Length: 193
Image (tube, rainbow, N blue to C red; front, side):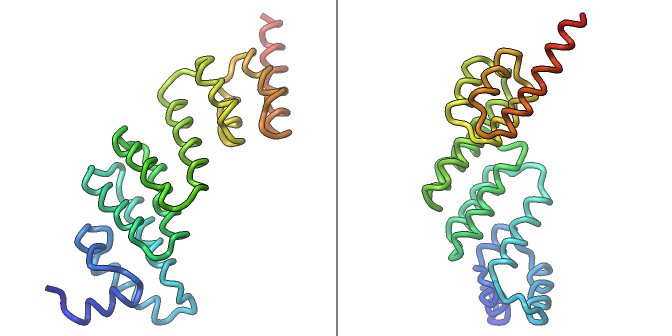
């Protein structure tokens, strides 16, 4: 049973008791935020909740399945879709997401809108690139489905043939120019051997 004072503090910033139950929010942090909120021009409660999400993630190197599920549940239940979607996408920055957590996140964030499809595609390709060699198959997927972030990422690991393709099919002029410069350097190094 929670007392009325605690209920009021939680409600003031848009929290539910689940934030405390799940350990994402502590009473100490709630008290700090309430003091700041009371004395601040920033009355946007979603800023305080997002700060709590970020602080929680920064305190963890990985999340147990229960912690992951609880965090995701809080994002999906929040009334501020924009803030909550940012907090959910922040989960992709956790280096040690298990494959099951990664898939659950990919399947869940569609709740926030169609724009998340691009995020899922990018994160799926990045995950493949971080755990596998840049094979011709993965490179082809990156060219076809990847955005400029993916194209820029693969420049550093691309071979000469892949760089030649990036010069032509890179998502933007910057990527095509960087690929061209790298190809020139590699060709020069190869010829000087």
